[in-house]
Length: 157
Image (cartoon, rainbow, N blue to C red; front, side, top):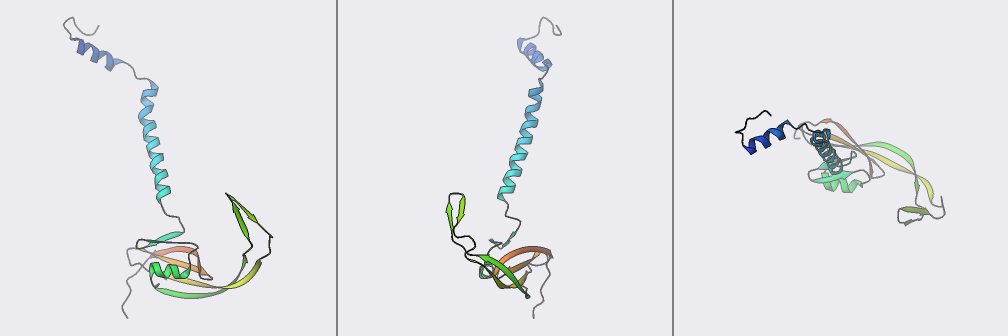
């Protein structure tokens, strides 16, 4: 034995515990805990983040599918507005019934038609320290949000 006859029982116990080899499962527990915490935080960050096709005006969220007037109410007037032209889009206003997660169409293609819609571009400039946004509306409905670089300081007229 590595300790003499005068050694206290506490010293003997401490020596025996320190010399005991650790099992592989005891070594894996801290690593497993770190990995599971990282996965949990990454999942929470993904769920808490807003969609890629959305942005914030102040504390209001703007996302695809919103009407032009809703965007104007949330963000105010854009730095520039351009009318890009017209496009023909197909719409289907057929009667649909939802049964739980299943959508059933009655009389398929009964209300399918094409119409011409105006395409409008809004550019929002939030200043030189924030990114500008390019919004594309088709028929007054927001269909695309793009980031186009940092803004600029607008000169007063």
